[in-house]
Length: 112
Length: 114
Image (cartoon, rainbow over all chains, first blue to last red; front, side, top):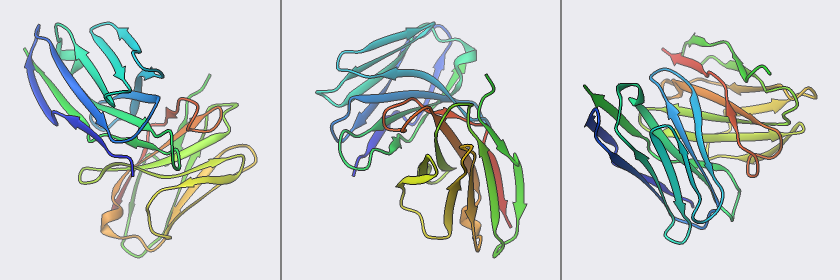
């Protein structure tokens, strides 16, 4: 069964600092998503990563995928308060029943 | 293009009752998936429907069921509600199968079971 782990689970960081959220998964996958969720809200799609070495950037967020290491990272550059949210990675296995399996989420709080 | 819509947005039910939630996908999308989100278990896949057929199912008891209509709208039903069914239920639609196409999520239905 596919397992997806994120770390850290909680992250408080000061505005202006850089940090990285890690997403590890347990089986072969070429399809990984990053989502953002604000409290009480639905999921907003951030990035779709479809191949080894894929890198995508939007504003202060950059996501990358290393399928050999089964690892994706979400890097935050010069954090601002508006980035405070919970971030999820989600993976679809290349094998098995192809359901979207979510990580535990990382609750990010940006402190002024 | 209108996004995924879910009704109702909030619902309070009593243990033992049943509930039906509705999801209207983005126009032209044929796949609808349902997810349950709780603080303890996180986001968990319930099932996926594609062209009125259940393609995939998560590890939930038979009390959880769903269906999809010819216009791609989907409903999920939970019978004999338990306190642990309190959750945010999210549906997502995609143009084709969820394994291949990006999913777009609706606003969710917040179900509280008392």
